[in-house]
Image (tube, rainbow, N blue to C red):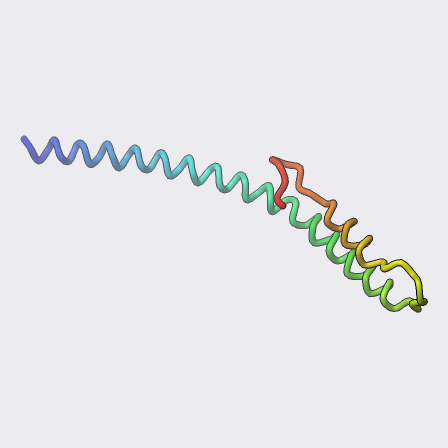
Length: 88
């Protein structure tokens, strides 16, 4: 009789843990899909930024010109994921 009580408790605990882990898995996979959907946009922005920086640094520089790199970096940093808050 005592062993069946312990087995029942273990079965209940195992079922509860499976439900909790399934819920955590669903939450994490939904967050991961949001990041994966937005990562393609981020990759395109980084590629565009890379091309822009190469084009800017291939231009002639003159004494007294304002540095362009800070303006370009600020433009790239302004991109944020707006799904559930910001990533950075």
